[in-house]
Amino acid sequence: ISQFGSIKVSTISRYSTMKSEIYRVFLRAFTMGAESQNLTLVQPVAPFGACFRSGSSGSVPVIDLLLQSEMVKWRIHGHNSMVKVSDDVMCLGFLDGGDNLGNSIVLGGHQLEDNLLEFDLGTSMLGFSSSLVMKKTSCSQLTSSALQRNIQEIGRA
Image: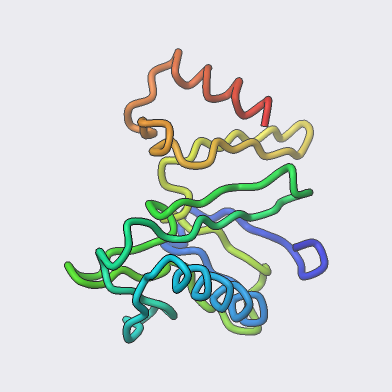
C-alpha cells in the first residue's frame, strides 16, 4: 500500500472503501478466488460491486491485507468480508471510492467488527487480532482476562 498511499481505520464508514485503481484489482482477484471456490456470481446489489448466490459454497476467499511485510497481515474472513443482502444473495462488503478518495483504503466498521485493535500512540503502532469470531468469541464476550490474553497474542503477531 505504501506505493499507493495510506490506510485509514474508520468506525464511521460502514464498509471498507478503496480508490478505484486498487478496488478494480482487488475485485478481480476476489471474484477469481470466489469462482474457484464454486461461488456463483449474480447481479450486483447497490452499493456493492460483486454479489454471489448464498449457499452456493460453504466458504468465501480469505482476504489478507499485507501491512508492512508478508509476515504482518490482517486476515479478513467471510464474517467480515461478506454482507448478506437477502436470503439468496451475499455481497462483497468493500466499495469503490472513486479516484478522489482521500486515502488509498478506508477500513470500515463491517471489516472492523469483532476485531481487537490496540493503538500504541507512543510508538505509532497498531496491533490487531483479526477476527475474534474465528477464536470462538466476540468483542461483547471479552472479559478482562480474555482481553489481556488477546492483547498478549497481538504482541506476538
